[in-house]
Length: 112
Image 1 (cartoon, rainbow, N blue to C red):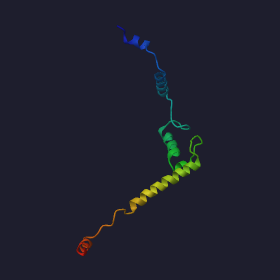
Image 2 (image 1 turned 90 degrees about the horizontal axis):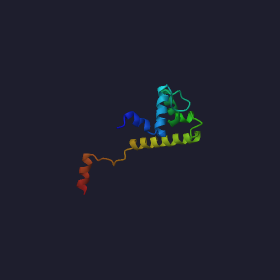
Image 3 (image 1 turned 60 degrees about the horizontal axis):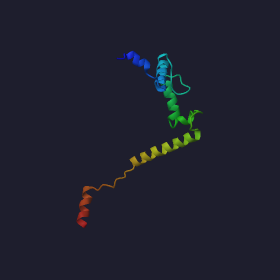
Image 4 (image 1 turned 90 degrees about the vertical axis):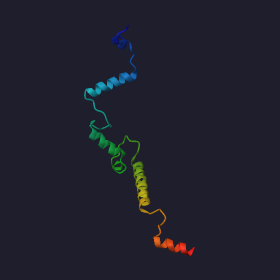
């Protein structure tokens, strides 16, 4: 019967497992990851995420590597604002039919 160590030695390493092993070692050695141009901390990654993805803030902090240019970001902001404004108007306007008072219902029933 084979021992566990001999089975481990005979196992072929896949490229995925080697990559995972190398990434794990890199992180254990203090490697940092995140958005390009950040120092790897959560705060710098969050700032970069907001500058890239927020409709209003993103218009002013355009990254040259991002596929959206300034004009496209302005259009995203205009569309987002229009949709939000439309929902606000629909919520403010009473769409349901007007309700009748109790006295009005009785008068109409007598006429018919």
